[in-house]
Image 1 (cartoon, rainbow, N blue to C red):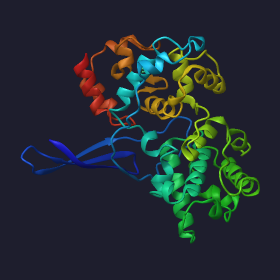
Image 2 (spheres, rainbow, N blue to C red; image 1 turned 45 degrees about the vertical axis):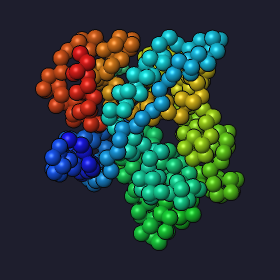
Image 3 (spheres, protein in one colour; image 1 turned 45 degrees about the horizontal axis):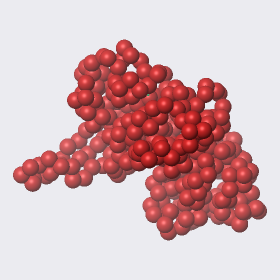
Length: 353
Ligand code: SF4
């Protein structure tokens, strides 16, 4: 049997409905519907998101990230002192990530512009870059799902006011701070972010010819925009690979695997990673690890029993009891209620152990 077409619909109560059209071996078509509770709030996100949360996401293949080759490893100068087994860990992540989609894959900042205005990256790259900036500015302390909704609300609200491009620099400057705030109410620190957006727009108009600047030093002059957002903005908006966007997941995981020293400073983690990680992986490492941290190695609730890093003894932080525990029906049911569809990964893990 082959899946001809599938579509996931996230309902307002957090339920995910995955509808698949399946072609059987005798070429007839059957419909299959899988219903799983899928959306959960992270503890630090803003409450009251249940009111209206309906997102339609075309099901797509999970991300395929490039693996590290032996040549990549050999090209790292010995003076860089790359951590042992980093490439084995990285490649296990690539394999695991190819088997499930995380919120970052469909509703992460870099996906949002195309999600709210399809093809904008090709038809209007300047508007694409601006939408990317706003989605990054809204993303701190906010789940991807909530950010996606806020961006879509802002975009459609501006279209309803007669702005054909929806969310753009030219349209958002027509809104007051309180009007912006009303559109983004569900994201963390929305009032402060509305103020930052107004000020950032004025800076873009006054100093950067109505576009996103092309250097990290210029980008971080925008209020509320730090290096993490800045490097992601450069990579996705301008295709400039000048640094790694280190978020909380990367900061946490890199320390746990011994890739960087323990610290409470994401900037230190960034500098350390950039010291030894080949530049060709600087862009991929963010969605690779963020998606892994959202679904498998979840903070305070790591799913070590379905993680090949635990099973292959590559992770220092593995919960050994959980790694060795069988996946019972109850456990499987719990895993399937997470933020990603783990069916394929669980099946592979069961075959492996
Ligand atoms: S702590 Fe567990 S889930 Fe996280 S990377 Fe290690 S083995 Fe995997």
